[in-house]
Length: 310
Image 1 (cartoon, one colour):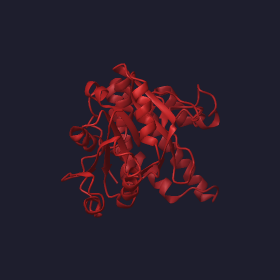
Image 2: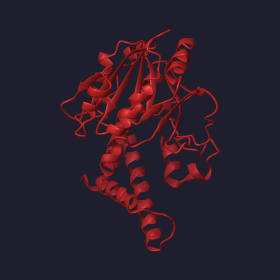
Image 3: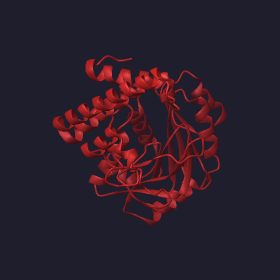
Image 4: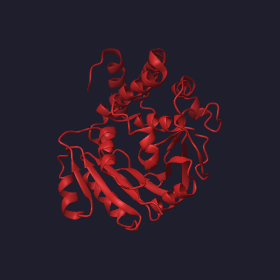
């Protein structure tokens, strides 16, 4: 039975972090090597919560917001377990989740990375299994073909809307909200790429696992709840831009300048089209278009064209 090091990166997510750590108290102590919280210079008393209420947790206080990849790598350096559970601060770990995932890795030595079935705070299934991005599957997203023909694998986009989440299977990308990684595989693949501050590091890491010959797998018998936006909700428009920035870095890293330029053009088309469509719907008072969604597409178009931040 291999022991697990749990690593949680937190930034101003106190109420979520408390729930996450409380859920981890259900995990068998024989299974856990340690729980490590890397706090990204929070100002909401998150570190004090950990120190006072969860003395069993190893707390690492960063002096600045290191971002997701760099902070997780800091936690990985301190981890001693054979398995590394990288869990978002806004995740509730269900009973036996980590045990089931670790048993699964015990029995499948060719798998380097595994993720559980994840539901949102509303109980609805979250999309956590994806394809690696390509021009074609992003083009399907831009045109909305992934929604119109969701059940067709050819058009279902990088979110694989046709995927049956009741079945275990190999995938190309697992959402970074909850991973269990084999430490031996991480030593060969390397940690998360720190050029990604937030977003796209999940695609990059999964691709590197696959390129190194490790399988990436989805295992629905293990379950978790992910509320979403535990940190990003503190600055939603900023994180919309950060997602674009991260995706541009990913495309440059893995597809060169030509691929990056193609992604740039499609991203501009995506946000421009939706900005115009949502503006028309809002003027006509049709549908439920919100002001925030309009702002999101507007700041993304502006950043793509001018480089100006929020």
